[in-house]
Length: 129
Image (cartoon, rainbow, N blue to C red; front, side, top):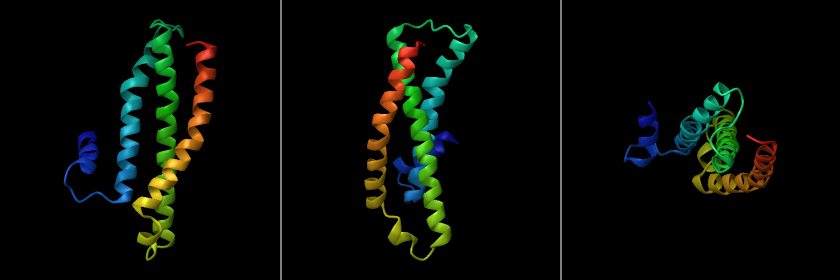
């Protein structure tokens, strides 16, 4: 399933619509979360809440946790807006939701939340892993 979702935007398959790109973005964010963040979180929990991997890996883990979770949430928000427009304005959908408007909006949202994420990441690191 993961290979099929990730291969869709990369391959020459016809599923290159903006909706499918949002779903691929969600799959990539969740894949990174599951591959990078969750194994380290599970190891921390099994060790009784103590971080045993060093300060540098703690900083990487905290940053990856905040950024992957935020990317996943923003992808879900984008999919929700996309589906809302698709259901409420089906005839005007292709004019409203274009790749250019999506890229501009996505860029603005990411810049807005990046500063907030870096602040929360710094707080998480200062609390100690």
